[in-house]
Length: 364
Image 1 (cartoon, rainbow, N blue to C red):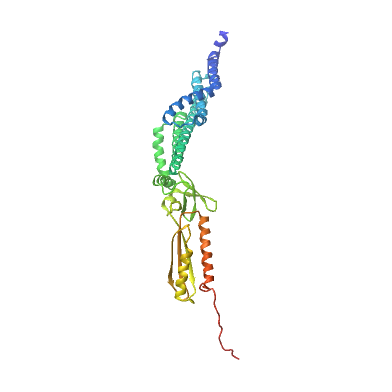
Image 2 (cartoon, rainbow, N blue to C red):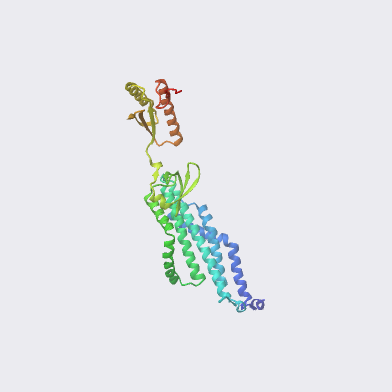
């Protein structure tokens, strides 16, 4: 039996193949249990920092990538104990098959490690979002989403650099030096994207608006649904989904309608000049009375201007920041009440009635 295990195939004994295969098979079979056990150990450490950690969420996000990373790591370490067969070590495009296999192993290991880090970031963001949901301020939620995306981009860049270093053998120092020169050129070409990125930081720290706010910018009115690294997504009152670059959100005049303390309505009346001053005074006082309403907080009615063909009356009222439907309904109600009052007092709008007289002499 020992003679069988001592036989050599492709520069390695059968015993070596059996040991490596046994280790990989053992880890493959117990991957789920090992990963959950290690995730449980890590959970115990995390629990000391965050008391309200959900173990099920933690295991669901971390256990699978952790198990895959361990499987790949142990497999690569085990295979490294074998001698690469000299018969298979041929040169392919100035690289030997041994170097190619080693590079592929490094790349796969780095990919699994980066995936694990990304899932850990998702878990940390999930914890922070649960805490942010307990506060009424939506700025915390959007800040978490922003930095989650930001750190994912950073880890992705680090992953690419690690692949270039350990997978392809590039010199990172010289690569970064060359990259800095290329970055300067790219920065000039992508200046607008960089400006949008900087503007996103301004939005998050200056907080002119947050997710859920109703804003008006660049002739667009809608509710902010997402603030990203480059742009802000707005759901308009027509239910369309508009993407506005962050630079425009910062540089343009932005009206945060959610922060207003009142809504204002304006009613302009051009009254015909065929009424007396006393009738006009009585009408203005009657309009003031019509403006009394539980939802109206302030009101003003006055004779704004005297024109040759009309008296211009301005009626303004302010309400609490009610919904647009409630506001429009109240404004319609007041318009109708004023129209009824004009009918009762027999007051006409300027130009409502006119007479045309034709005079002349018929020539034969």
